[in-house]
Image: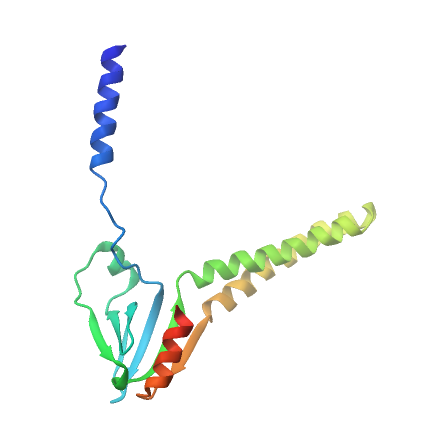
Length: 164
């Protein structure tokens, strides 16, 4: 019994010491489409925004998660014409919101009406909740923010304030 306890303590000590410290790794919150003043477009992930520049990872989110080694690209605010941001997991969040709104409408109908309305509300669940999920997914997929910078420092600082 004592040997088993010692073995478990030794194994758990190895697993605790083998964990990495990921506190200093930047995790991208937004997908980005950046248009330069020359009309070139770059798609990627927004890593960091400074006072006069922004840093973009020029790959996709699955490349980032796999650890693909693309070099980050730095753009000065004077070279940026337009920025389009897309939040992470917008579709999933929209589906959850739409489904919960549809379900809450059904539950409100059931609680406020008498027992005769309960049989009809089951049919409504089949219609309203999926419609809410589909509508929420559509709204979540369209959740983009556009910022028109046109090389202007003030517009870039407003962009910086809005995303923090």
